[in-house]
Length: 468
Ligand SMILES: Cc1cc2nc3c(=O)[nH]c(=O)nc-3n(C[C@H](O)[C@H](O)[C@H](O)COP(=O)(O)O)c2cc1C
Image (cartoon, rainbow, N blue to C red; front, side, top):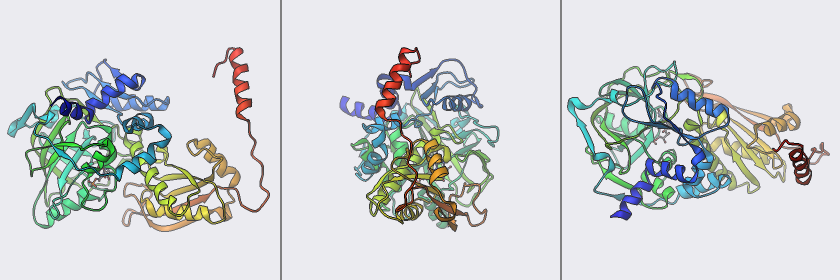
């Protein structure tokens, strides 16, 4: 029994917070001073990011609300790697490999979120500390709501984040613009004239966040089984009170309800991952019927806009997917970097040890064929550090012959939220840049300061009082 409780804890948001507090205390920031649910928390996270810091932030007191709020749980490569028990450089490959080791879930009789059950008139979403993050936002948004529902045809369930606009005590606007499983499940239910029973889960472990973003394949694979693969043990789920849906037993808050059939209402604008206000939405509506939660629930929020909390997991997912695809034909590809500053997918940098002409072009085509969101691919030689934007820009500035090394693919399908995509067809012109040195000609020699010279320089600087 105790072992089960420990397992539940390990798989929960709380278990993660405890791990950070004990093993990485510098990466957990507790803010005890009261903050406003409008703008304060978002501004704090962005100020931290500007100074190069990405701790998990726990706001203990939010004006007007009883619950503490945690944000920025997925903004830090070091912590995501720690969740998988690997070092930072191995994060994308380990993530990709574990995602393919599906583990069946375990259904447990007790759930942590059954302490408080609110039904009927007691359902009041306005009592949750739902944040208003940017001035453009049409209303406060639940941003860490994992929605789960079953496919009305196959009965297989899914889970994924979808933004939820607060519209009233029991009403939320929802956009299913990714058009993946949830969009399709809702479409299938609607075709039968039915609303889609659904559950919103708030407050889960970062491995749940990561696993929910994966393209689950084959189609009957449960994302919860993928998340189990990430944990390396069965993910523990408990049944809630709608459609027999199963959600993580260690979660903080569970909201049961349905996404209505045949109802569309204005939703948005919302501060999206592109760094722009988004007005594009599928305009669906979720009606809440019951709220369950822990007695001392912690409310989780994803910092919106182009924050790492919103984007880093997408970067890591895409790095793993693209690397995997490239490895099939190009074993000389060294690494892939999808920087968070280019919206978690719009650009990908590829490092390769080029052995023949045409390999960068192959890498560009394979990358664009693998990842819908990616529209610019830059290939560099292995001496360029793809995790250093300055080094990549230097390679473009000194190794690209514009007339030969830049390729365009017009009319390619792209992300709906990309502001440059055609508003009717959602297509863009994609671009590849070969920033590798040309082969077979005498090319300029790169200047180098050796490790030995650097070490000596540091020693001299340290004795001059300037330790680096
Ligand atoms: C923080 C966050 C918020 C997201 N919000 C939305 C959203 O509002 N609508 C949407 O369609 N996808 C959104 N996504 C992407 C989906 O969660 C992702 O595509 C997921 O895999 C879809 O799950 P599904 O396959 O169950 O539909 C979001 C992703 C993140 C990380």
